Length: 217
Ligand code: ADP
Image 1 (cartoon, helix red, strand yellow):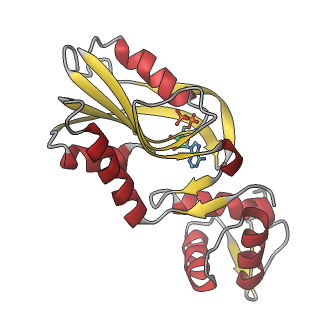
Image 2 (cartoon, rainbow, N blue to C red):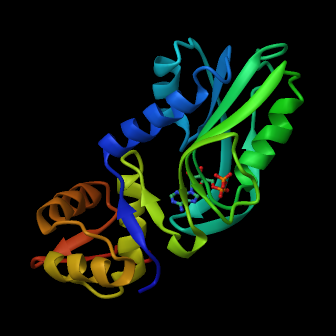
Image 3 (cartoon, protein in one colour):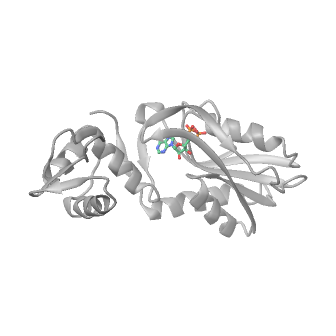
C-alpha cells in the first residue's frame, strides 16, 4: 500500500457542512464568508446558504501540487480590495492537514482588519499545526487518508492512476491496483467512464483495450 485514499460522497459533504452549521449557529455570527480556493469553495457556498450569508468571497491558497504530494511552501493570493474591514469573518476550507494553508490564510486575512475572524473546515487531521475554531469531523494522524472530494475526482484519480500505470493495463487490473496501492474502491464501470473522459482530454491513451499514460508523462 502506498497510502490510503477514498472517494467522498456528496451526501457526506452536505452532512459535514450541516454539522458545521450547527456548531456555528448560536456561537458566532459571521457577516462574511471567505472560501479558500479551490478546496473550500463548495463548502463555503453551502455554508453561505445554511447561515444566510450573502457576502461570500474567495482567497486562493496553493500547497499540494499533485495529489498527496506537497508543493513546497503554502502560497496565498488575496485581492487587495477584499471588503471585510470591520466585519465578522468566517474562513472556510475543506480540510486542515498540515495546517499551513489555513495558518497563512489567517495571517493574511487579519491584515484586512476584520472585527473578528474564525476558521472552519469539514475535516481536521489531528497532526495539523493549526486547529480550526470549527470542524465537523476529526481524523487521527494514524488514519491519514487522501480524501477525494467530489469536486476533485478527475485530478485525483488521474494522479493516482499515473502513480501505478507504468505500463499499459486493462481497466480491471487498474481497478485492482488502485485498491492494492491506495485502498481505493472504484468500480470498473465508473473507472472505465473516467478513463474515456481522460482520454478525450489527452491525459491517458488507449490501445487494444489497454490504458496507458501518454508519452512523456
Ligand atoms: P490546511 O492543512 O491548512 O488545509 P494544507 O496545506 O495541508 O493546508 O492543505 C491545503 C489543501 O490541500 C486542502 O485545503 C485540501 O484541498 C488539500 N488537501 C490537503 N490534505 C488533504 C487530504 N488529506 N485529502 C484531500 N485533500 C487534501
